[in-house]
Length: 287
Image (cartoon, rainbow, N blue to C red; front, side, top):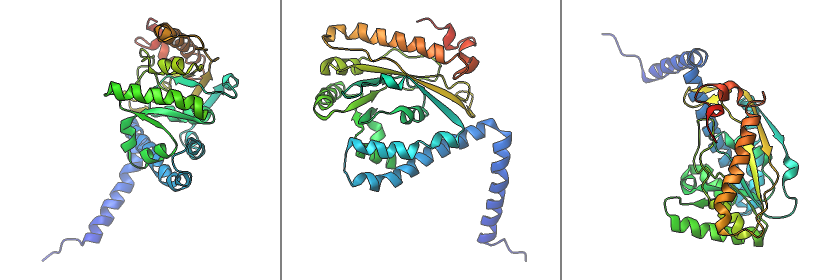
């Protein structure tokens, strides 16, 4: 009577099969390569967060811990062959609080953010990130501000506290005013929370624009290759003397300037490529 192979033999065969399939999928399937790259990207960030937690825990919850996270994340762009070019960094006010507003395309925004993140600057993030395992704990230790967008009252209360923190603790905040990731190569209408915050604290707004990723990354097409991204820091927009009534016009003006620069840097051969010239691309969308 023939015997079934032992458990170790089965495991060995499965392992050898896996070793054969993974390289085959990597070279033959762009979609598989996309999923492998995104899985590694997210998994690597979670692993780096595990390493960062004990170092950050020495200080406790402190915005200075953001320097540690930034240092640990800066190398990721090299792993993916993404060149990040920063222009206009001299526009950051040298010694005062301010509110950074930036366009939001995907989780890859983290690469551009870490490249240009000023000192004592923390993002405002959705509360769900707090429960994202090691990454959530690392972000909490680094002073990231979490808001529950579904509970408007709580969000307004948090933003009022942030306005006081900006002034009393010399902190800068980074906000994605679109409110969610936008994969279509344009900019969604801006939510006004960041602008109310800046007006309430009477601090400048510093717009930051990241060029389109469409020449190297597209979630819909399951495409993720190497490429180039330009990050442009725009001159600060003052808010002194403005009132809540001025917020809608302020938000529209900042969005218009950011969208103009987005078009410029996404079609100059340094980011975005030809996507904006395609039918349905941002180049054909009205302001």
